[in-house]
Image 1: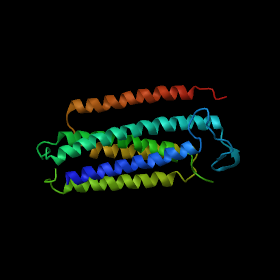
Image 2 (image 1 turned 30 degrees about the horizontal axis):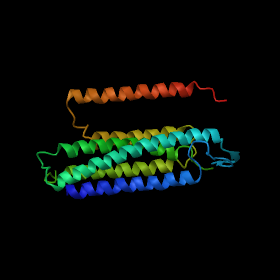
Image 3 (image 1 turned 90 degrees about the horizontal axis):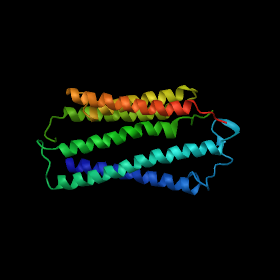
Length: 132
Length: 96
């Protein structure tokens, strides 16, 4: 059961990182990465027909977006490393009902990364996207 | 862990389903036009979800040690200082 759950955690974590990679790739293709080649002209503001987004404001948003999701992704990669280590230790049968502190602490770390995403998801992806 | 009764597992699954419902609710709330309350509602739902994760998944609900409580309260206090300083900068900026 522990082995299955560890593998499931790894699969879901890596799926998240894979989606992130697709997302980042799209941002690079559309020149939405802050820097000299940043491009955000002629983008309509959602819910305000005829009004265009200010590229300077958009660049600040994307800078925050990349720093926050990037740091979160880095935490995820560290977490994947921790869970790979837990998996090999569990495979060797090192954890018992009496001794499972590393699993507990690894879980605490994973939940902390989870809480960060609970806040980042609405802040970066949902707020101000209401139509009409 | 696997030898325990099924009741903690049931709690975890209930909390997990509640968290999924919270996510669906935030996505739905984002489609409504509530002006300044969009951000407030999103953050209230997020804080409720974070509280559930901390209380049940991170086992703070049954934590009794005073030291642990002190650590959690201190952490939240320092987070508050960081956010307050950031907002002080943001709030006093002149957008030209």
